[in-house]
Length: 249
Image (cartoon, rainbow, N blue to C red; front, side):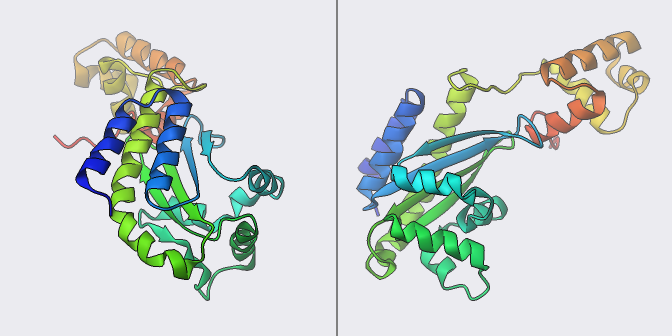
């Protein structure tokens, strides 16, 4: 477990991460500080429900990256699958000892060992706008050699993974990555929120005290910002990207 000074240093580093290279340096420094040899960060941003934008920052051996991609392992990677459905940190040893693990996911983990990714941990991160991030650290040492270190490091890594993801989110907002998240005006947000409740343009106008023509205008503008061809698609994209969500008061 790291000292408070060390953790504060990583937090400060995340707040000043400049571009993808800055995030890569942060992840590499985290891995080194906690005794790991490799890392990988991946995140999907719901710019589309079918083909979301994906960012990968890898500190894995190049040979493994090439093999992983050539075999299409992303679709069957058990660490990724776990992180899409749970926020609980995954220690790889636990996965390998699971008697219910299928053959293909087991093969992914077994072959990873051959490339130096012998033991490790994967952490799931959920963003405020529907993003899903996965941060994994791995070691060339066996699970028996690293288990106590991983158990001790998890609380710190769980905290710091949120700062890694926040740094990436900041790059998206700043336009530093090749995709962005649209920003809605307050009125566009209101109109879409009521459209998501099934209200017609006339009903939205009545609720907000504006003309029906104005309500339609704002809904069309929102759809344009979201690159949506219909009101229904605009609502779906706004929900998936966290632009409209449950109102708490």
